[in-house]
Image (cartoon, rainbow, N blue to C red; front, top):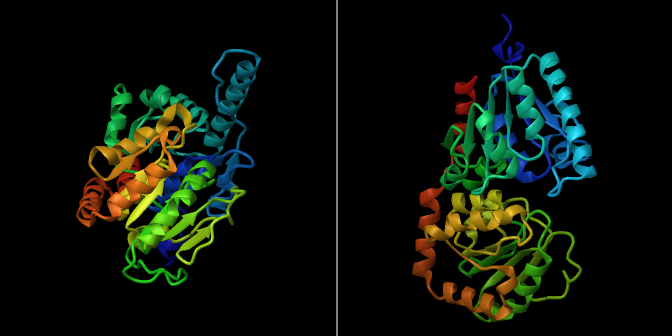
Length: 361
């Protein structure tokens, strides 16, 4: 008798996630919790999903772009491309005989949602940010259900059915939570550790502030692991035995668990990882994020007392230096911040979202 593992999967699902790790990683985490489905991917040419998804799921690619602020010739071109992409997605859904669509927001979700709903299929949309993006706010009422990462997002989606599920983290991240070892980083045990995270692209302005403030932290005995990104021209300007500068680091679950304090941007994925690991933070939202959405994400941690937030334009190296020293000198407060972060963390977000998918289908 043929093993059930080798039998073809009769249920078919299309996942639309494109552009950034913030969209693609949660979608992959959801897909991994739906082993009973044959899953195919909807993406955009030359975007991150080709690298992250790889050959795990068959990939369909369409051309789509975001709407500009002002109406003009560019808007008409984008509208024409949107109509064409809807037609392409409808063809993909029909040929693939998919039961429904899961999307994690962004530009690609518009044609995916419209195509699925005009074919009478359910759509499950996951929104990670505390302030949902424009596409999510406009199309959320069309969706069968909207899974949200932070409860505050529901205020912007009053006409949609919303369920708070948290934001799924990568399976590798969750696996590393149980084994928080850092054998490749020569950090002594017992020393205070500060980790600086600028997001996937790094943060040159934030990096500069950190390097100016860091000498006082070294005098305190602290070590600094600085994830600089790959685009910082001054990456070698600070040299110190207690300072480790890396473009990125793979095992963030272990690093955050060892960390006494993070200095970080506040993308939804990073905030979620800080919550899950119970890491106190000083958050400096990316000042050019669409609709200032990183500040809204940061406030999720600030409101419960798990983080402090500073605006980059108003923050000096001296302020950052002193804020970090104040926190390192108050271990009781750091412990409380950690507990508050864990109190609102949702570790099983991928499973919760996958269950929503099953119910919707």
